[in-house]
Image 1 (cartoon, one colour):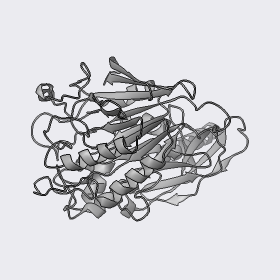
Image 2: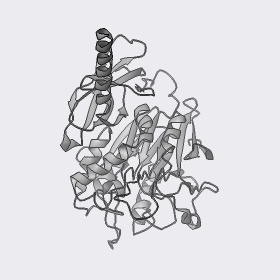
Image 3: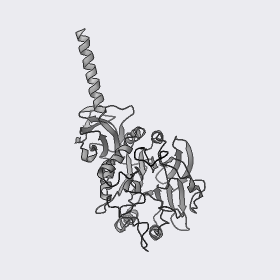
Image 4: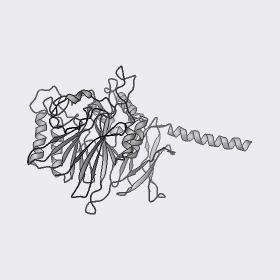
Length: 441
């Protein structure tokens, strides 16, 4: 009898000890950027704890590797950036999260794959990625009165079901509210509330996640370079994402770049250096002089098959309403960028945009000039703007307007000399909505 009681006590003690460790996990783990020799991983705890990740190649399960161990701290919202820097190109790794040296178990796979070393060896790898903007997670105590602005959180599980190679969050990934944007406490509260939604966890843990921001991550609605607390919101952005960088050289902001297969991705910041919408000036800028110069130089240098420019607001639309390039006096900068692409004969430039609470594809075609595309995907879980169906955009591809919560999956396939880009839009339940194809010039 005493032996049975002892065994039961040991089992219960072990169970509660393991449970107590999992109860320390607030959100994550999340895969950040993925390269050949390193992958960024992320997690958030509920209180101070030691966090690390142990990982192994699926072909060498007995050879374990460990990231750095991070003691999470309150001033950093108990977040941890964990670097897996003992990887090989093109390998798949199983990873396990440990909190206070106790393994945390999940009911889904936790694994990552490094980028392949393919140049001068094979055709470029085929790949796909999911994209979307506008993630609003309801918190009634701090939301506007009335029906919740967010919903259909199952969209995140349905993104996973499409098996993308990575996820591209194209702005308004959180919605800072009146209690949030003026203090570090409020900013970190909003990030924590959004990042902790249960339906998001599998997506975060399954594929690399890259992000830009827009006004609702940056500050108040339609905020610009005058926002006094933008350095604090940038610090919050850094804490909760795992981008390759936060700024380029001496250019501050939520700016970065990455390459995937034969495609380049230029992630821009259309807030930190943005002139106020109400400013009357002939030379208004969304990007700022330095960021714009970097973009031009980088596009000129790039030999990628497709060159994706990722930014919060729409670039091509002629609608001229809300915060698009053809409104509030920003048209001259839009024209400047288009004329630069034409003059340098930079082919296969595709803008990936969000913000607008509807999705659509815009195409700018001029004889003997490179064709420019703008693929807008919005919203994920925030409210859709059905009124936009009456908006006149002369560059919109007929039939591409979507006025419901949705996401896109963009795939690049085919041999090196015969690549094809395919865009599929899906609703929040994963049901197909619209398809479009682009062949490189």
